Length: 216
Image: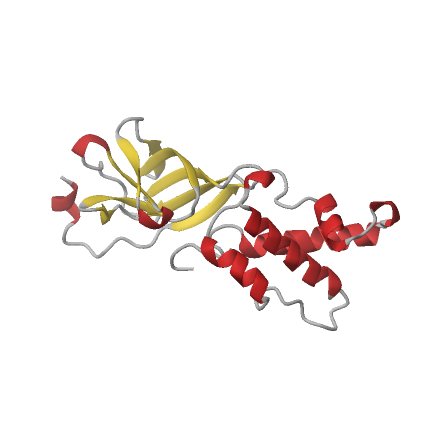
C-alpha cells in the first residue's frame, strides 16, 4: 500500500504548474476598452491600437494564471499541467493524492506517472477528482485503491487539467471591470512620466478581493 511504502519519506514537494495551452479569445475586447476610454474607433490609428492591445495584455497578464497571476486563478479556459514527485499523504482527509490550486478548475483530463523515464497514463476509473474548500480540487485513487509505483523523480507524476471561467463574457463582471480600470491607468499614463496605478487603486482592489485565491 502507498502509505506503508512512503510513510518514512519527507513530505511531497509542492506541485509545479505549467500552462501548456493558452486561452483563446479576449477577457476584454479592444472595442470594449475603446468604449470605456471614450475613444472613437473611426479616429483610431495603429499606435493607439498597439497601446490599447498592450495595456489589455498587461492587465490580464497581471491577474491571470498560477504564479505571477495576482488572483491565483484562471480567467479564460486554458490547459495546465501540474507535476510532483509523489502524492501528498493527506490530500483529502487521510487519502493520499494531489491538490490542484488553480480555480476555477473545469476538468481533470488525465493523470500520468513516470516509469522508466516515460509517462504512462493511468486508466480512467482508477482515480477521481474531489472538490475541497477554497475552490481546490484533490485527485485521489478511486474506490479506496492505492497509487501505483513511479520513478523517483521531481516530476514523477503529471496531471493535465483545464481551468477558467469559459469565454470572455463568462468571466465575472467585477474582474472585467477591474481590468478596464487597469487598462485606463496604463493608457492614460502611456508616456511613462506617471506610474500607472495597477495595484494601489482602491476601486480595483475592492473589485478583485473576493476573487483572490487562498494564499495569494
